[in-house]
Amino acid sequence: MNNYSHGQFCWIELTAQNWQQAKDFYCNLFGWTAIDQPIGDDLYYTMWQRDGKTVAAMHQATSVQQERGVTTNWLSYIAVDDASVSTVQAKALGAEIIVGPYDVMDAGRMSIIKEPDGAHFAIWQGIKHPGIELRDSENTLCWNELASKNADVSADFYTKLFNWQAADKSMGSVKYTEMTAAGSPQAGIMEMTEEWGDIPPHWMPYFQVESCDDMAKQAEKLGATICVPPTSIPDVGRFSVIQDVQGATFSVITLLET
Image (cartoon, rainbow, N blue to C red; front, side, top):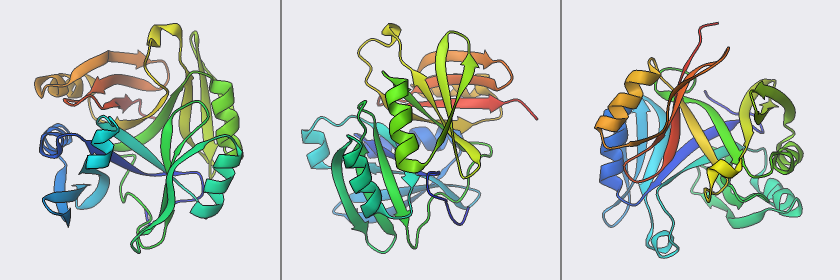
């Protein structure tokens, strides 16, 4: 993709406690190629590519992040027309601004935000770098999902901030809201139940794969933990929730052919 409209997910980034271990895990799991860009003394910002196109990124947790107890995690970025304006709007809607807005050289402008229910995400105003170049294909990002302790509050926040349209979907006994932006489904919001325990609200990326079952087995061989074993979703596909070797959570999904 060359550009992203306001409200579309445009980038995903892994912050890792152990940069090399994380790089090896995802390269071996998804067949990604790592392009390391020096950003300091023995520090790199890694672009992950598939078929020569960027699909995700990662970096070593900074000393400040480590002091704050930041664990290995995936951060989802949402495109905005104006990062400064959206940051002000997010704060007015009850969010906490963790950092920003600030310029990332000439690539773009961003903020990291903690929404009212507690989940973290980033906004990105692309300038020379609009976002990932490949998605919705094998071993690339295809969906983002918010686990929320109050789905109604979260849905209200995001619809106001990004002009998303919300529609409740039937997912058995689980409350699930599908969010649409730029005329296409962008994300889902799932209500967290007591069974989730102390797990905080969070955004989770989904990667499209050829075989959910095979990918879950491969992830386990590489040292990952299978949080939700391969499970079928009627009329959608088959998915599994995985915790990588450092504790970051993501999902893989094999979609039904339409």
